[in-house]
Image (cartoon, rainbow over all chains, first blue to last red; front, side):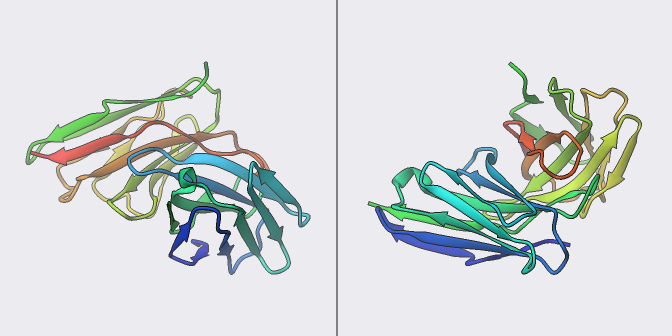
Length: 110
Length: 114
């Protein structure tokens, strides 16, 4: 079952912050985050495993609340290079298939 | 360097023709995936394979076929039954496990109808 992402799209000015959410109706083992620029393949950002951990990648960080079955991606002091579509992906358990969310389109303007 | 190679980068299909998209990986990954992406849309799963000689249909398998005769290779055939094949096709691979392994993507193949 596909996870839900919100918002569908967001427009920011350079230097502003944004939060992208990913939630599932099923229990999750892990949440993956990817960014895809127009015309290119998705690029892996980070994985969060069960345990409520928080990870960071430059000024991009994320959290995972397994009780609420949701993850949030935090983009701090956004840069023009952050523009793209952000996908979350979820895995429910060992050997289970990987399912992508519908994506959130982020546009950072100068 | 390890990675996933998709070919060709661009492909044109004539009416009634079958075409095959190549995907090769040298990451020694067990699982391989094919996704279709339409302009401005998300990634839709066509087929996936978790082990050699075995594969499962994804959400939009109709009009497509695959094979997994070798661990490294997972070709996708777009058959003439797929009436609207124009899209960006992405192949990915992943080491199966407890969900702590990322998917690695090839650069994609853009398929258009002539």
